[in-house]
Image (cartoon, rainbow, N blue to C red; front, side):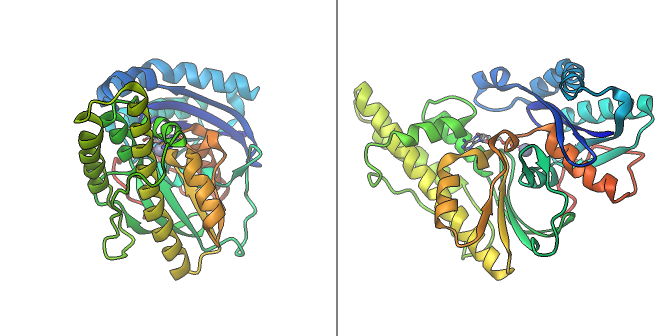
Length: 344
Ligand code: KG4
Ligand code: ZN
């Protein structure tokens, strides 16, 4: 007996299957990176078309990997939002059709709640027996579309503490990568460039503190990085080696600025709300620089998802669905696309 999770909110077509004990049975992700890379960002129309092409194949492959038959699926969890409307529709309608044909319930999952669950998967198993000693915990959600601080009071009681006023962290990584003439997605490339810094202290980029609130802003950092790039990279006649060094030093300064703000605000919120743990989820949580610095500098217990579960996947959606299934929540009969954040 198992739960199927379907995720199509952005540019990954993903299915995941877990059993009722939370064990991961199958996890297949069809990435669209090559489709969007030439544009330096996601083109929504191309994303929904690619989901249409991929969804059935990804589902079939996940079943095969799980070594179960479709009859063993007890419920279908699907991302209903937030996300790109056209992309969400593909996953939701596929899930609706499948739930009718298999005669099993459909569970709508908020994408952000899915990302939070990803941090609770260890050794391919969702941890289902956390007690009050784990809560409250604070989740920092950092992805291509989101930068949020969320207080977790239990497995499914969340409240929003703060969020970005403009760009999400991952979006800032992607845009900075584009302006430095690097590829897409920007996060892993900037991380790699920053590792080859020639001088850590060569540049200092601004930090947006916003009166020490729990709100974030990364658009100023992006503009400052653009101005620095224009001054240092494009107005000087640099040779190849100097160009690489400059790109690496700018990337390093960018990452430092991002880390300082995320670390300080997350630590302050965790202290104010007497949190026992800090969970850091979402695509940007795959970043080694952020992981190492959070783990070495924080006085809180910091929990990251395993890298494969940082970016969008079906397992995180199945995990959230399993919690609802086990709690026997009222299951959605008339699921509709809800592209905005409406849980918190
Ligand atoms: O969670 P995700 O797969 O999709 C959204 O829900 O947005 O996150 C994708 C984002 C992209 O912006 C990508 O550049 C960023 O995560 N990302 C990274 C890294 N790997 C992916 N950012 C920084 N460092 C990384 N290693
Ligand atoms: Zn995501």
